[in-house]
Length: 212
Ligand SMILES: Nc1ncnc2c1ncn2[C@@H]1O[C@H](COP(=O)(O)OP(=O)(O)OP(=O)(O)O)[C@@H](O)[C@H]1O
Ligand SMILES: O=P(O)(O)OC[C@H]1O[C@H](OP(=O)(O)OP(=O)(O)O)[C@H](O)[C@@H]1O
Image (cartoon, rainbow, N blue to C red):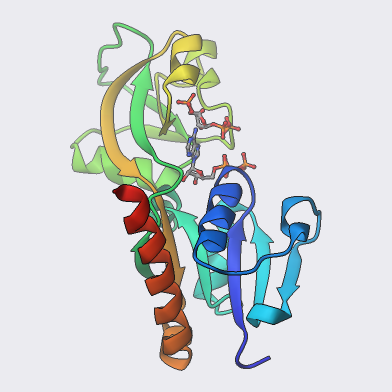
């Protein structure tokens, strides 16, 4: 299977959009992708193996070389800081990272707490801002933290803004816009450069077409 390409796909909300993009780029992906609990799906016609991972873990599989390429949110890339090449902005799963809190929040000097699923990113952000905070790592439902008094602020993804609004929170600072990226293992890029370049080219073509 030396000439096969292993692709790490994030399960969850990016999956369908990424799948659609690949199909539009001409990859023949069977119906099995749309309704399966399998974590490895081989597509011999394309000489491709797909592994379905947790979104936050995709760069880990790619860094270790068990996947040649992968799809990961920019949020995950910033948080994880893995040694991989980021070769293409897929322009899917658009959202942004923001600091949010209760309305009227005022910065306090003593032990301000920030809850986030992105502890590394949040630590770096507040350091850059020259603010000392305690980061509390959560795995989901981040908006709950200020409501229940676990933290004063949160660092989290905002897309429609509905979760903030329905929980009575407001955005305090915008950190960075987020989209999903195509990432590549550096060794795979040397060994399979033609196949990977071709993939980038085919996907770019679809993305540019959709932008017009
Ligand atoms: N509300 C959103 N709208 C658009 N894109 C989002 C949104 N939330 C997250 N994303 C993007 O999708 C990626 C994966 O999100 P998803 O919610 O599927 O995974 P997750 O939160 O890591 O999964 P899980 O909740 O199972 O741990 C994120 O890394 C981010 O890039
Ligand atoms: O601005 P919105 O459109 O409301 O989207 C933002 C929400 O989406 C994500 O949560 P997700 O649905 O992944 O749930 P989680 O709390 O389990 O992370 C994110 O963490 C926000 O809570």
